[in-house]
Image 1 (cartoon, rainbow, N blue to C red):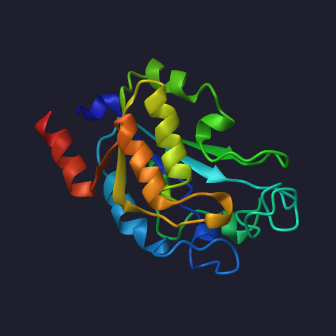
Image 2: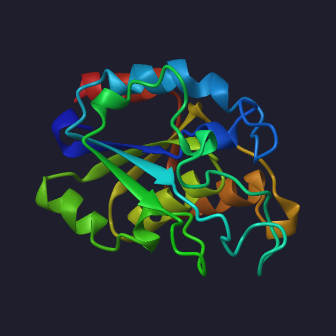
Length: 199
């Protein structure tokens, strides 16, 4: 793995997915990922992108709306939509907002930014490392879409946190099994750093 050909994607590392906003959609251990993500952000990736859930207040997935799946979370302009305190956001090359269409969900960045894989290719990126919240939902769908586009993909477990959402049919073990079937590799921060050092 060459750093210059590897991109990092920090997925939805936002307050609304943590105990900092308990009325939203807190993921156990969500806020605790910041030090590990910052360790990744200090590495010499060829490109670093972040995604940000940016929902309107009447998003279709919210309770009381069409799909009735989730409490309101990461609503545009609210504290829940802000990145986690202490996150080294100055390292982001770009922030990709998603979930802003009230009538459709967008777990992966590619759902609303279909040109993202081509942008990575144009910059010589062949491998991506994905971390953030939630490991088995937005991280997984981002990793899956990029893997299906031909990228080598790592999911960084200790810089992420997951949660089962039965009402949406989203389970951690199910996501992991599909990811591994597709050839997505689960690693920790130390292993990823070592892979880059050995290249």
